[in-house]
Length: 223
Length: 303
Image (tube, rainbow over all chains, first blue to last red; front, side, top):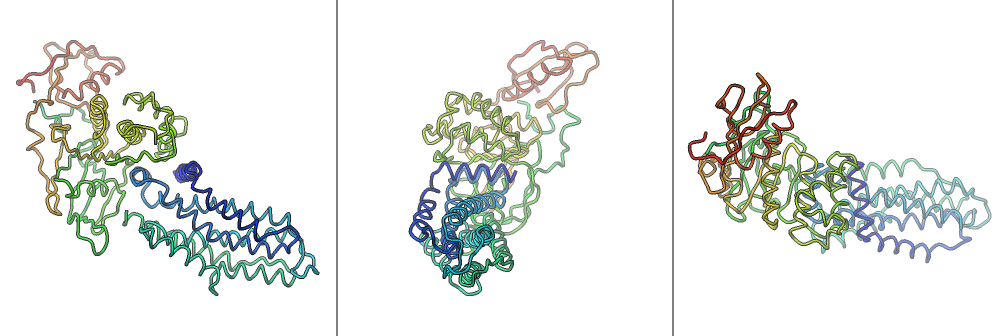
């Protein structure tokens, strides 16, 4: 049933064309900030940082794109929590695909070297480190999106500023897994060592699971 | 006319009387901690193979009760138990989904647990039955209000739900489709499902509801056997006389009342007009099939 729900939500996301705005914004962001020949780990950190608000935006789209009447039909068939979980999962998977594509592109065009271009940095391991950072951003972005859109925050006037503020704080606050993952990458770039952290992805996973569980719990209580 | 409640069904192997599809215990609902209660202390059970009607003035919480029964919303207090496979038809079905009619129905069929092929097949079959086959490949936003309501109805019926919840599902349908929905409801009940509905038309399925609940204030009270037992213009019955294979019993679970016919091995069934197609189909497709001797409209004395 979960597969059918995710398939339905993915079709809804793609056919609604509301994914275009965040994806184009992300592409523009990368085009402005990433150029060929820059240090690979620095560019990956930049791309991973940008993915976080984009993921939160995708979550917002995924949980608002289904009209209320149709949402009732899906909730009756699958249960409101599972239906909501499918929306969040769809956004996370879309963000993951976007992050993976960005990682490949950045790893290919960047200079496989440290920030001062003195030490070589292997492209393959750098891409793996980039994927890990993307994963952390997608997880934290999903958590931010889940907690700042319906059913947790129902008014757009509250939800959109809350989403932007939470996404920004997640990137700059010490202790945030997203900030830790980005710091690992930039420090690795400076030292010419590819970081493969375990702590940040584990913490990001815990944050995402808790936020998603809370949002799904609320989804049956606040229509 | 013969009331076609549980007592009237001929089956011995049908769903047990105690078969609760879903149950509310002291359930209440409010839309926010500082908002007023819409419903409080609702304790009721919806049994399998029954039709439940919910009545009440506008804004009294009929939709809220149906959403609790469909488990779309969790109660703010109290408990809800039972997890039947549920389908729901909302009061207003949005046309703004980016799918064709069949595309949406196929997705919903999969969510209901069907394979993609079965879902698409049933989607076409239900659109055809509801008279919307010509719109199968029309994008939902281009459909008229009535046709998009047919899609909402098809969505709920295509996966044979154990609990069917209809919130003014007839509104916006043309007369033929309303009739089809009446029959589909009768079929679901005969097949052992629970059906709960709200409709602004007091004559909607009047006489067929096994239980009627009325909402006043925040309370839900049971009022069975008044309005729903009253005879009304649409409550026609049909008398069917059939001859079966020697010594054969009638198939279990048929709606209506059965008695011995004029000759040996014949039976006389009095069924609601609404159920007559279903009964005839059931008997004619039995193996070996039953021979239908006569079908005539029922009169006042037919029980």
